[in-house]
Amino acid sequence: MSPIGTFFGEANYKYDVPRQGRLFAGHPGRIELAHGRNFETALRDLEGFERIWVIFLFHENEGWRPTTRPPVPAPGKERIGTFASRSPYRPNPIGLSCVRLLRIEGLTLYVDEADLLNETPILDIKPYIPMADAFPDAKAGWVDEQIKESWTVETTLAFEEQNQWLRKNSEFDLLSFAQVQLRRGPFDDSRCRVAVDENSCTGTLAYRTFRIDFSYNLEYRQITLLAVRSGYSAEDLADSDDKYGDKSLHTDFLAAFY
Image (cartoon, rainbow, N blue to C red):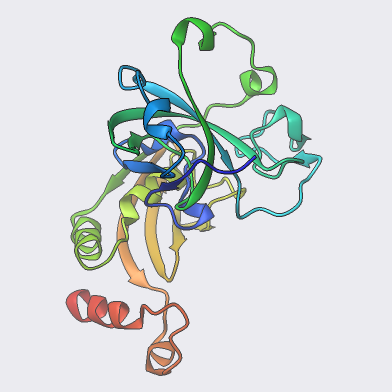
């Protein structure tokens, strides 16, 4: 097999990717198919489908694991077999995602609700057919036993202003990242880059070199994003070493808000 194209989107790091594509609505990406392989003809008649199956490679993963810890384990099932999971660490690193097809322009497919990393190699595209592909009453094994813990994520004015500044001056969208990471609750340590103080009901979510401070209400399952701060100390910023190439962004951010 060889890739037929490449996906381009906002998620550059694994922790940017939502657990399910439907949790990432409103963040469109695109699939660019290869030229010179008659894919223009292969795309004929696909325009009328609202959703498509995208088969792709987990191109940044190496090796596989026979068991995995699901993001939201069922009671008594802290680890499950890989073939009973959607884990990206598989014997063959093949992924499957059902994305929303927005439009097609030439060899470019514009999509939404994609749980793919930027520059993911695409192996194949198939139409989603509800009659054949949807079984809403099918049993889902251990997933049916999950404790569904959904939280609401709210923001303060201070956070909104800081996030808007970052969106204007960089490609970062900390609100989207926080929603993806925290909607299942701040206590899930399988993916969230979170430190929680249960005494004060506060926590910090790490996003690259920035930090998002939040508070939470356990009774109402509510999280409030309080503010954004730099993960660099004054000494770090004074050091000429700029491993991530973002110290000037942090300096400007601090000047604007602190």
